[in-house]
Length: 311
Image 1: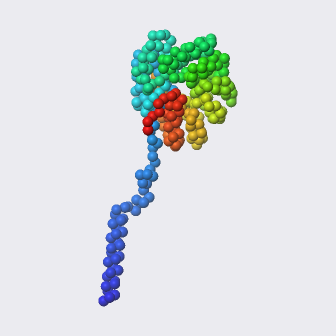
Image 2: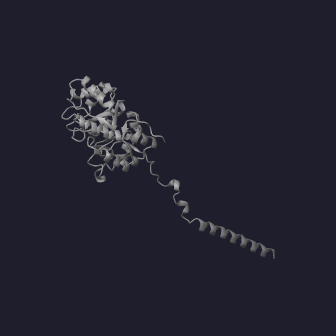
Image 3: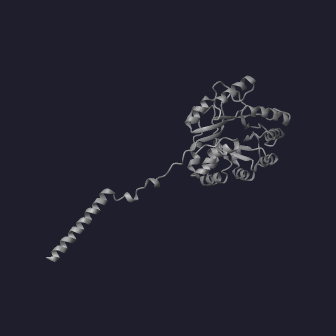
C-alpha cells in the first residue's frame, strides 16, 4: 500500500513538472532566447541638425533664398552659409543688387548667413581691401569666399593681399583649389607658407586640397588656423576609398572638420542632383556622437561664433 502511495506521488510530481514545462514552452517559443532584444537591435545615430557651411544661391534676386529655406527644411539643415561666386545672380555688382541681397538675408537672419567676396586684383592695397571688408562685416558677412584665385598660384601676391586683409578684420577665408585655381604642387607647400604667414587668419580648405589627403591630414594637425570643408564630390570620392581610414581621419581631426554640401541653385529643388551621400556618409562611419556633433555643427558654432544648440 505504501509503495502504491509513493508511486502515485511520483506520478503527480512528474505530471506537475510536465505542466510547468508545457506552460513555459507555450509562453516562450524555443527560439525566443536567441531572438534579439530591443537593446540588441542596430540603432540609428541620433539625428543632429546640420549647419552647412557651403552652399550657393541667387542671393541678389528677389526671393532668392526661398529655395534655400525649402531645401533646409527638407534636409534637416538648421543653419547654412551662402558663399557668392563671381556670377551674375550670386554676387552683387551694383548698389541696387546689394540692397536686394541684404534684404534677402535679413528675412532669414540667424538661419541663412553669408560670406562676402573680393577677388584678386579688386584692390591695390591691403588698406583698401580692409575698408571694403569692414563694410561687409557691418552688413552681416561672417567669412570671405569662395576664393577662387583663377589662374594663380595659391601664394600669388594678389592672393596674399586678400589673406592679409582678412586677417586684419578677422574674417575666415574659404578657398578653392583645383587645376587652374589657387594652384599648388605636390606636398602643398604653398598652403603651408600662407598658413604660417597669416597665423591669425583662419582658412577653410575645399575642393582639390582633399586629393592630397596625406598632406591635408598633416596640415590639419600642424596648423591651428586651418579647417576643412567637407562639401563637394571630391571629399566623398577620397574618404570612401577606405572607410576605416575615413573614420580614424574624422576622429583625429574632429575639431577641424566642417559639414558642407556645395548645394546650389542648380540642386535645391532636385534631389537627384543633390549631394545625397553627404547627408548619410558620416553617420555610416559609426563615429562617436560627440565627434558627429562637432562635425555636423559644433565646429561651425565655434568658428563663426554661432550660439550653440541647447540639448
